[in-house]
Length: 338
Image (cartoon, rainbow, N blue to C red; front, top):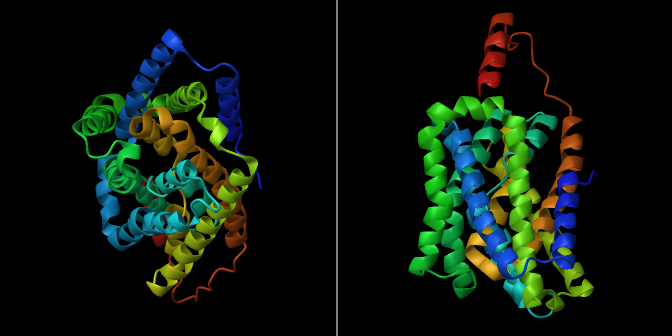
């Protein structure tokens, strides 16, 4: 069960923010840079998403609807149910972060990777993760405003303007300019990936610096963190079980069930951190802590599940039903193009 190196970078950034938090003019500069980084991140998200691939993926609408329902309906219901654990197991700020965790969209990269390892429907995982990220730009802020109330800015005009300007407008700009910048982004995918991660580290540093200056970390004890981890483990176990056996009840085949399980049970750190910065402001540090912990937990658990799924026996194919060489080539081409 590997530890994601990026999680170590995030934890290191938290440590730097704890020892050397940005104050005064430095805090203003960091806040401005963080705002610009968030806008640039969502511009890249928009420029990377192929409109044609997204439209082609709509053909498998039952699978995508199932993943979206898991991400934006079942997950939030579990988050609301956890309200009964306050204040016995969770503090109110930690619960707010846990509830926000249940509202963010699914991952893209890790869903694809684990689906591929487990020999599932990779094209479906690509489209499901992309649709979830796209929907999350609108759905996550609306759910946060409705369920978190004043802690996430509510339905005030200022919060709506922030969401539109920092998240939606850059994303739409990326989609509109994809025709001209898509090739550049594809050619420099690796370098821009580092830019993505550096931008998120800046967002984390700014958020945790504000938390340190305001002294909110005195509210968190080791016992409360242990309680948070236990609750998150239960949430993850419930979602992994529900997505797998629910897929069977809905009569999806094995490959589709694998895509549903990995795309419908995870949450995106890359999308959630910038959104939390916009929605929570100075309280973002506690809001993103549950998401950071859940992200590492889901990677470790899903890595084990994917390897076990890969060892599952494949159904036997009779000679009459076996595809011809030409049809195998066509299927392989369709898979690569998807």
